[in-house]
Image (cartoon, rainbow, N blue to C red):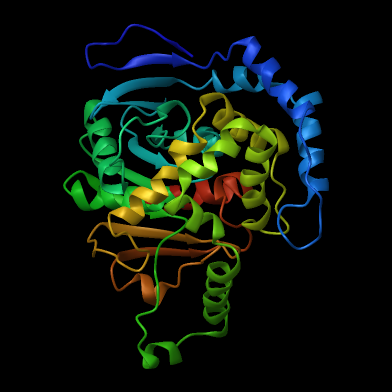
Length: 372
């Protein structure tokens, strides 16, 4: 990975440049995969994973995708002792509102490839890699939890000279940008989310008010907690043990990540295979499967819980996608958020920027057009 000399603010231009021997090593490892036996219904099917792995090894063109990544203006800077990588796409409008755009797991800044351009029509887009993820990783010390990451990103926006800005996030990006709003309220003009922690209070009277659609969303979340959250328990308790497999086997890493892009999406969505594999490749070449997973352990160690939400006064917009793994319900979200905008999308799931990039970009523009 190439970096140039830092500017006076400590910000260095950055280019992705993976050595050819690492690309060759990836292909050798994929060719030598020891495939497990297979029974339907027990996890990511071998046939699906093998097809993806074969494409990754024989047809996928990393150099082409690397060149596409390098068309994005990328930079790094050091904050709180950690290297922070970020994309910074400036709008042609000099007075455009800066927008802090944050990804989640198992995504990366690659998730946003289809929304950088439409969002930059109205915003100066700043999309950092979470510490421990992609080119912001790995982390080399404990303690990089949501609050510390949020403080680092608030510092990044200050370092870029942005005195007022908006935020947008899903998955971990939602938790992180919401925390940014709590600690930097003076400068955050609004926060837009495509996922948002909003759980029932347990009040029977409140539950009686739920519509059929809201009940189906609640059921979706309960099913996910029972059957789809095993990854969460492992990564929040034993990320190091898991990492021996993910850091050594590209097929293992592929199955671990691609499963989520299969299960957490709208069945009608078509995830771009090259974009998915670029995302996985970034995890592989940076060796960050372990440090990315550690965020779950940091969250658990600091007493994190999706139901424990500090009230926020920041003007908040939500895009509710129907196939989100735990779709937010407005009556619950309003208890701890200043909801001023709520859109119910017709299609899409957890990876909104990849599944419904145009719809997500339109909703972000609409929300900030009303609050900024």
